[in-house]
Amino acid sequence: MSTTTSAKSGTWRNWGGTVAARPAREVAPASVEELAAAVRKAAEDGLTVKAVGTGHSFTSIAATDGVLIRPQLLTGIRTIDRDAMTVTVEAGTPLKRLNMALARAGLSLTNMGDIMEQTVAGAISTGTHGTGRDSASIAAQIKGLELVTADGSVLSCSAEGTEEERAVFAAARIGLGALGIVTAITFAVEPVFLLTAREEPMSFDEVTSRFDELWAENEHFEFYWFPHTGNTNTKRNNRSAGPEQPVGRLSGWFEDEFLSNGVFQVAQWVGRTVPATVPAIAQVSSRALSARTYTEIPYKVFTSPRRVRFVEMEYAVPREALVETLRELKAAVDRSGLRISFPVEVRTAPADDITLSTASGRDSAYIAVHMYKGTPYQAYFTAAERIFTAHGGRPHWGKVHTRDAEYFAEVYPRFGEFTALRDRLDPDRRFQNDYLRRVLGR
Image (cartoon, rainbow, N blue to C red; front, top):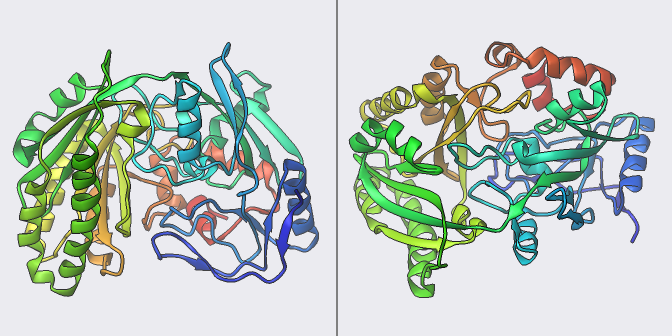
């Protein structure tokens, strides 16, 4: 199979509809060698280069007016090493396909986010994460990386390499596309296991007053608060000896498709058209999902379909600041006159050692705010961001935020380590775009 190149490309748009770009050309390399050649050709033509996955970032992190690399031919598992308990996978592989292939092989990632449409490279490059007391983001499960750097050479790195390779590994696991184009990733895996999920409603006051206890008692704890209500839905996932007890086909369709996607979509349409109805809809929505318990393999518990399109902002705050931050957000919404039709999602992650991970060096809690696609979100997000930044929050790299390099230098102790490495690997800024210019500086 050979490279497909279109000299004239159309407009590229992201999933959330917040970003559009018109690249000079698009390339879909079928091998690492063809990708390296495309980077060298871009340099000859004086063009920048960006790789794009499925467009699930709400920021312009993948936008370019230069060469757009589409990795759909760089997919599949290269190797499974059962002695080392690792899997090496091509960068363009969707998480969904990786999860299913691992399950067929009797293996699983330890933790994952709640959607699995992204490519593996896109997911790690922006810091995609789930929730976990002890297990961290997808990037924290990486054992090795291969990437094409700005001069078209192929660099492999891991924690066991040379000093320079270790420095690259520390940064490139969440590299924002600034250090090179990831071509393959080696993940740690483990024998597939079962999780028992317990979902149940809980009041906002109870979940916030008991948060430390709920976090400590569960391997994976998260909850959704419905603005304009005192209601939340909680989810606790813990390892189980079995037996497997999946959600029934009919009840699963009713809860996950009919209520969580179908009825929710209609509610969003109504709320966007008649904002005054939002608080009443929120009261109904927050009580629609009933308590349930089921036991399944990990990806069937961690992930769920997301068919209602939205725009999202998410910040990581120190875990000990979560409850205060969330109560401030609730108070701000209650007094604002805003009409918020989407629930607020709360998750956690342990500290990790990745240079620009939102959990780098500190136990973290994530607060994600959403608005239905097409609904004005700026007033809500601005109010939320003011609260998050007052607590030293770090925004998700792939979700809406207004922060810049000056801010990041304050909230990331190792920010200078990342930018110095970028100066070495990409001195001519082959992988630059407007977003990286803002968040990393010139």
